[in-house]
Image (cartoon, rainbow over all chains, first blue to last red; front, side, top):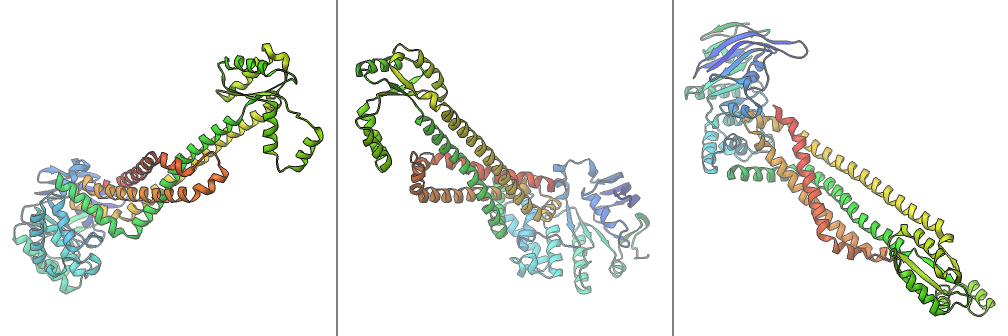
Length: 226
Length: 302
């Protein structure tokens, strides 16, 4: 489903972010990408979202070379992916409801359907009582749950979560990870990038370890060893 | 398609109100620019009328020798009227000239005293000639000096006034050119400031635009609300500018009439209302929409 083929990414300042990285992710898998800060985790996810272009190599999503897509085709790729970011990336001028609804509006779903889906998903993430709150009126955990709701609401094939628990306390961290696991159980592929050791060790799922831009370990039911 | 359009309008409307102060600042700057542009068009009209009325005031007077009969002068008048460059010829008899002089200088005691001193009527009969165009006076004066009746002509005042006439025209032309250039520069500055204000507003929202791209929104879907916001701002600015313009013309019309006796500013405003409205709407909406379109392009490359 997702395939990284000999990916090298060198930034302008000659910093090597990724060095000949290759791996595949199968449908319905739950894969964690771990590594220290600066190991290249975020770059990997950005390449898959076509936010960045690789210096060498190719990234495939559902058999399509992501980098061959034109600017206007990229939005169609992104609609198949749900993204969760460490800094939530919610639209500050929109309410929780509007933020989640936005992912369905871009697809062009009718209003009634959007309303039904959004309220349902907000209930799953436990934000039914914060529908009309703006992001600034939510706690960190609530913002991240809203972001997950947005990533989830259009039923994407895959969810990319980049350090989704980076700004959260342990209680909210397990909350978010459990949510991602439930989403995965419902059949959605999840790619989780994190440096949270405890989270990874409790997951008992596939772990790809990056160090200085290279894959140094790829194990089923892996652990955080660095 | 219709649903997407409705969503864009709704989102633009929401963005406009949630921006609050920033939207107001944009409207204010836009209104100022629209006002400057409209003023430019309006004062250009006033300037044109002023200059043409100034040109209208220029004429040539041919003074006839004492003793030339009125009949001869009227014959000369008919002859002059045959010249294609001549627009109008008016006969002023010595009596009329005297009455005009007294009328004009009634309050100047020294002049009145001198007139009394001279005794009788010192004025000569004359023909006032107006040409079709200011540049034709030279040709007319040449015709006059060679005409059949030139023997009975005492003097043609064109040659005495030539330098003054030329100066007036060259000053009027210069004033027109300088004021148009200044207004154009002012207009360009205002347009740049407006563009920059809108650019800053959008720069402020660059992160939101990026998020929208990452969530999978198409460029049109992201651009739409911003363009609509630009449209609303432009419309509001045009209306505000129109209200200010109307008030200024209304308030200053009576005061300006003392200075510019040939023009009634408010009447001129009413006459050119629709074209002014069109200029303001086009400037406001055009600037708002175009600035938004140009400013947002940069952030859609994510």
